[in-house]
Amino acid sequence: MYPETNDAILMVFYLLYSLFVMAYCAYAYIGMGLGGFRMARKIGMTNPWLFWIPMANVYAMGNLADQQTALCEGKSTSYRKKLLAWNIITICTALLFVIAMIPILVVATVHGTMDENGTVTIPEAYMNDLVGPSLFFLFSLLVLLVISVIYMVVYYKVLYRIFKLYAPDGAVGLLLLSIFVNIAVPAIFLILSGKEPALPMPARGEGENDGGNGYYSL
Image (cartoon, rainbow, N blue to C red; front, side, top):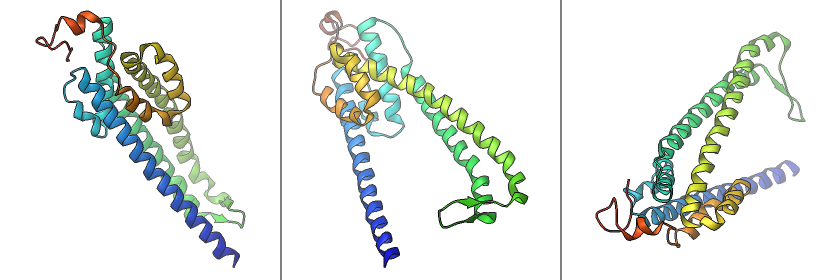
């Protein structure tokens, strides 16, 4: 009776968890896609539809940050390239980390035994087989942590630039909220997409760089 009850509880838990994950993915996709698309279109950014495409939306976010620096500060930056590059590097490193786990899992599955508490014990005869894979695992974990930190630094720099474009007075607060409550980012994008970009008057009034429509386009 008790095992069946526990299995039922686990099934309900996994079902609820799966529904939560799907709901969050839909919320993040719609929030970032629609919000980013509307913000990009308001400043005349080319190909705003890239915000709807996975991976390409990373490039689009960086492009939006590049436009902020060009419009508001007159500087040329390459956030779009940096953010996309570090995103790809992070994904590849994560795959390397997963690959590093495979030999350890194979040895534990084939030669290990699990007690009633769920603790896996591997015979000493096979412990030497884990030395190399364990070192590779630790190395890949260290590399993944370092690269993830670098990527997050670039990512939050991009967010700050985007926030400055649509909420210059609250950019710092929105950045801190994004860091500590990352789930709020899609909602922030949706809210900011309803605002007008805070562009310098010459850039919006004189129509430079765009043939007279008052917007700058890279």
